Image 1 (cartoon, helix red, strand yellow):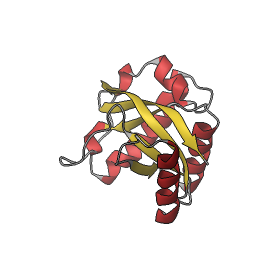
Image 2: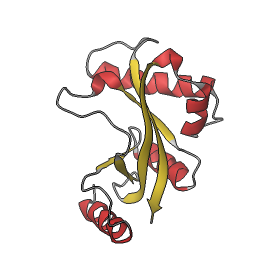
Image 3: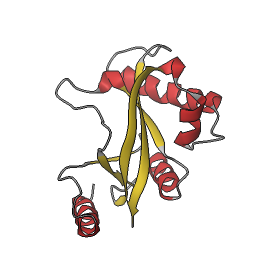
Image 4: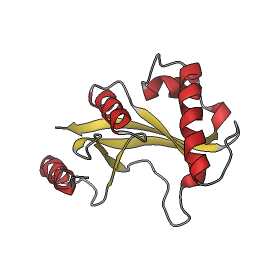
Length: 151
């Protein structure tokens, strides 16, 4: 991960947003370089305005995302490419994620069916690594965000 690009992007953002919070999170989408690049591009072009993560994988001392949280989105090489701000955070069970949320994630054909298929596969892989099983009632964290800065 290129910490220099993260620090530089945050400093550039703060210059034009002097009231920006002091803290932020920096991360890449997905579990591969290709996925991180593809999803970061969807954020940059305004297609992707939501994401979902597995609630059970947050550590006890790791804070959940919250409204107002600033996230620096990284590409597959760990370079900062955009900053988004969370506008909504909800914890719901997997099979109750809405069609609207699936659409806002901006992936594939943007249908709930597509969303469920790719996220089920993704969560199965994540859970297998910690010896847990996927089921349709796992809690997930649904975040909505707005793009507030890009390179």
